[in-house]
Structure formats: C-alpha cells, structure tokens
Length: 382
Ligand SMILES: Nc1ncnc2c1ncn2[C@@H]1O[C@H](COP(=O)(O)OP(=O)(O)O)[C@@H](O)[C@H]1O
Ligand SMILES: CC(=O)OP(=O)(O)O
Ligand SMILES: [Mg+2]
Image 1 (tube, rainbow, N blue to C red):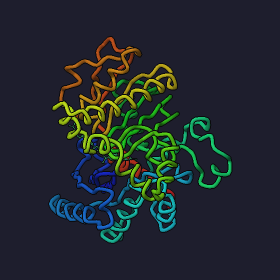
Image 2 (image 1 turned 60 degrees about the horizontal axis):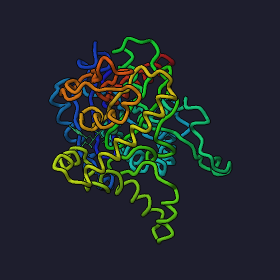
Image 3 (image 1 turned 135 degrees about the horizontal axis):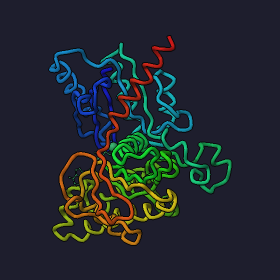
Image 4 (image 1 turned 90 degrees about the vertical axis):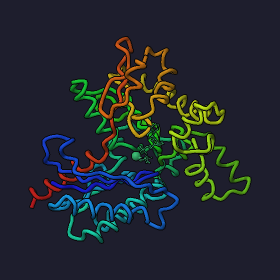
C-alpha cells in the first residue's frame, strides 16, 4: 500500500511516501522531505502548505498513482489510544482534548489531518501514537507521588513519548544483534529528547512524563527541574502561559547556549565559547545519569542505542555521554564513532560492557506499516 506519512516534530514537519509492499525498507521509500515548521509559527500553517505543495509536485513527478492512505504521527494519545486508529471526528476531538499535554505537537497533528482531509478527501487517515509503546511501564514508575484527586482529575502520570521511534529502533536493533528478546536503553535525541529502558522488548521506564517536557535537556525545553522553580516564576508575576512558554520554547540548549540547534552549539563549543560548552555538558551529563540508572532497571542491557537527529549525527555528543559511563564499562571506538554512515552500526570497542549502537530513526516507516496493517484488518473484517 502507498502511504503518505506526516510527522510533525517540534521543529519540523517530515513527510514520506512509502510503499509498504516493497521487498525492503530502502525500496519502499518513494520520496521524503522535511520543512522547518517551528512550533511558534504554526498558526500561519505556511510550513504545512509549503510541504503539501512540494508533495503534490513530487507525487505528480512520480508519474503513477498517489497515496492510498495517510498515516499521522500523534504524540499524545493519553490513556485512550493503545493502538493505531482510523481518524474520525471523534478521534480528532480526543486528540484535541489532549493538546494541553502536548502543546507543541498535538495541534500540529490536527492541522495535518484537516489539511490532508481537504487535499485528499477520499483517502483513509490513520493516527499512530507515540505514547502507545509506553503503556507497559509499571504503575510504580508511571505514577507521581501526588494526592489521588489530582491523579484522577487529569490523570497526572507518566505517559512517555517517542514510542514510535523507540519501538522501531528496538526492532532494527534486535534484528541487527540477532536476538529474539531485546533488553536495551534507547536514547532518542533530536530537538525533543528522551531515553527509554526496554526489557524483553517492552518499555519499562522513560524520561518524558505527563508531557514531553520532563527529563533530558532539549533544544528549547528544560527537562527535569525542581517544581518550585515554576512556583517562584509565578510568585514573581509570570502567568501559567508565560511559564509554559519559558520552559517549552525558551529553555534547554537555547537558554544556555543561545541556539537550539546542536550543530550551532557544537561549533560554538569548538571555538571554546563557555556557554556552549556548558550547554553540551549539561545535556550529555543529564542523559548519562538516566542511562546509568536504566542500566540497573533493564538488568544486563544488550545495547545502548543512539537515535534521533543528534543521536545519529553527533559523535561529539555521543562521546561526551559515553565518557561519563566508563565506570559501567562502556567504551566507544573513536574511529567507529566518528565514521559518517547513515546505517545501523556498532560504535563501541569489543571490550565495552555492552554494545553501543547508532540506529537511524525511522518513525515514518513504522507509521506507514501500522497504517497499512490497520487498513488491511479493516478490509478483512468487511
Ligand atoms: N550532523 C549533526 N551534528 C549535530 N547535530 C545534528 C546534526 N544533524 C542534525 N543535528 C541536530 O538534530 C536536531 C534535530 O533532530 P530531529 O530528530 O530531526 O528533530 P525533531 O524531530 O524533534 O524536529 C537538531 O538539533 C540538529 O542540530
Ligand atoms: C515528543 C517529542 O518531543 O517529539 P519531537 O522530538 O519530534 O519534537
Ligand atoms: Mg522527531
């Protein structure tokens, strides 16, 4: 099946046209593209229209039939969505209800669904959720220790994100290492970043929480902080919206180094700029701390996996993270780590306590496959 995949991340809109019946992943990718679509410029939808114009032109250029279905990445599916679903008015309204818990992402998915529905009114659309993979996290790791009525009201708990990417990275890793059941720690580091503990192929803990704000230091998000910081900002007169904006859009690498783009931060750090070096150290140290903790949670990890724009491309960041993990017996091979190759590969030494891998993130392939599988089941049921 030809599936058009729309993946609105926090800084970009990625789109792929895939043929899920092709013999392998490479052959199945008919075209792909990406436009900058910064979260604070989304009200204009210019990025979305630019992507759609490019898509139309490329689909025409392919000279054959266009997509038969559209698959969307939806970051927050709450407690309701454990599996991919057909997009209906009711589903869109549920995704909208969850928007306060993923303000950078869920509204963008709804914009994509609306626009795709107008452009291709006859095509079925499917929503695939980042949160679904993390539903296996045990209650003791998912709950925050706050009063029960607060939990019941929202419910305030850890949902976890990047699940589509992590699940796909686990599949690719298990195949690469030739293991039937994978224990691993998967660090998805892009503009948004999270790390997940995977035991027997299932998520058992992850650094993002009720929203994609918790955990690691990200491009523009603070990650973990003492909740009292929020109270202090409010006591000083900031509104809830202002605090939200400060922590989601003005924090992270941007706040410390002046740029949310890891390439810019690395270049500045290379020139010896102290703020850039500090930002890099903060981001790497925070991730290393989580990995060390998760190595106990996972018990005998079979791999540490780096994926996402930074995880896949930044040897400097990976070297800094793994540098902190020497006491665990992890060691990178400098030549393998710095080799510039866009494929799954090992970057650790043979002496490393467990292998460290770079695994290209392929959220779009996972979404295309889930979309085709759901629609095939629907057809069988008719
Ligand atoms: N060669 C590279 N070296 C360092 N960082 C890189 C490189 N290529 C991409 N990145 C970083 O990857 C991040 C974007 O990752 P990505 O996973 O595409 O983000 P998102 O899906 O959240 O929009 C940016 O911070 C960018 O600087
Ligand atoms: C959940 C999240 O932060 O996604 P992204 O990294 O694509 O912005
Ligand atoms: Mg992303």
